[in-house]
Length: 95
Image 1 (cartoon, rainbow, N blue to C red):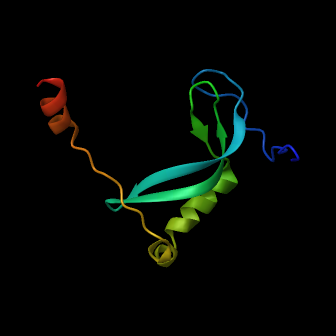
Image 2: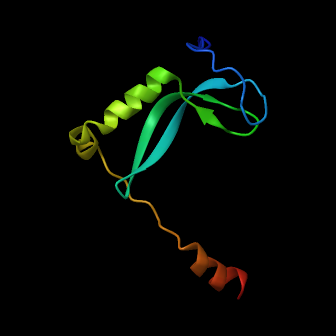
């Protein structure tokens, strides 16, 4: 397997000064009360603390995605559990 050559220098993490590594990530956004999950987003990721940043081009592409709601509504859907944290604490922590 050929090693991946980074296409962008993301610099260092603003939180812990560790050099960022280019990776594909899954990014989630809340748009009008709906969770939207975007897979395979190219980003700089801190291997130390996990902070993620995208470059300007990717940021503009993400913004453009939300300007085309017809695309977002046409892609597959997933279901996720919704945990009420206060109910969990009451039932399992303070029991």
